Image 1 (cartoon, rainbow, N blue to C red):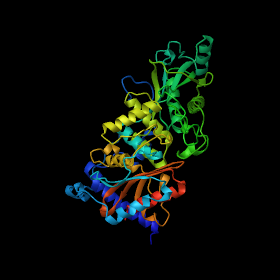
Image 2 (image 1 turned 135 degrees about the vertical axis):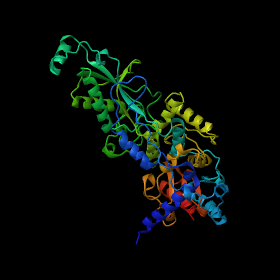
Image 3 (image 1 turned 120 degrees about the vertical axis):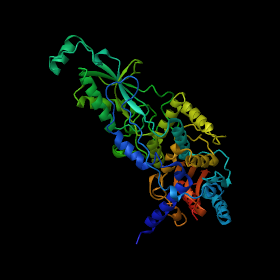
Image 4 (image 1 turned 180 degrees about the vertical axis):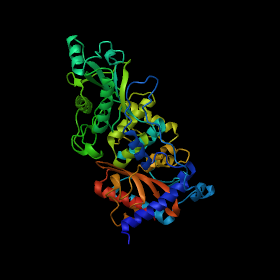
Length: 500
């Protein structure tokens, strides 16, 4: 016999799958940026790390995988039933009010519950009041990034050179001698090492494995040109403004730079996966350049002195490039693990796309402008960062549910990773250890939601299959909560009630 949690997961997943297919996905085709496809894209991208410079574009950049044929179309209900407004049973409406008044949620929590298919608000309490969202702001970060960049966009990290010796017409290369003789001749002639630059593109997921592949491609390109010694520089000029988050040095986020390795983590958490607090380097870019220099030496290249920070020349030729996973996969990972480094990277990529400075201020302007262009209710919103660590962030519960409803819009399939990236209650990400109490267990496996936690601030926003089999979006924001554990249990109880 199935264990209770397994049975709930099986039943919940089946119902949720049918409702999503009926209410949004079946009308839009398959999810082109769901978690399984993102994993396939990631696997396919591992070996695509560029090579020699090719003028006129980026031929090494992986192309998006084609969409699969549509499935489950026959399960879609009549269009009339999707357009008909849903409603909450009177009993449930009466239940939510008293639960929202729990002292565990502080003096004036906010709530919004919306029918995803129609966008109609079914329940609201202070839904238009701007409040500190904590990490639920990452839902806004995700929608803005996917809208501006597209789900298939990848972030590149490149190695370039403007040194004539690294081009194919190096007349000083002694083709007749061995590598040792050529190097000796260069030194005898007073030839300086070839200068190359590691250019950070803002990929917060760059790790040693991909740096190793980038070093292999770089060494191959240089050997093909008869180069055996380099002076390594690194360029982080893509980002501007303060590197430190306003929260200050913190285990939850590294200094925000355009180049880093393993998110600047100083423990073993960078080896296999990211997410969660860890000691961080004060100089992630310099550390990444040091790692890259070591990898070049392992491949037979000599380096002249330690890496130095310097902006790459404008006329530099590309030697090699490595790309991140698609933005769709980055969004899912950010939401599931509440990854602050990815969040700050994505809002800066949004700013770059909009032609604004890739800084905290530029990102705020770009994200708010993108959401406003999408005609979302951004009144009163202050998005001071992409991660939600800034206590001066403000957002409404009504905006959060509008963002979630927009992500389920059949006409906006590029936003679907916002839904597929949400943790599953009791099973994954930041919800893995929650929904265990008797008054919240009904939500286990049935709810997908983004969490938010700062001192005195607790929030929860996500989706659930509600009464009548309709997909609901909900958002609950609490400030001045007396304790995080009791506040989280109260939020879990509130959202679990929506399943009945």
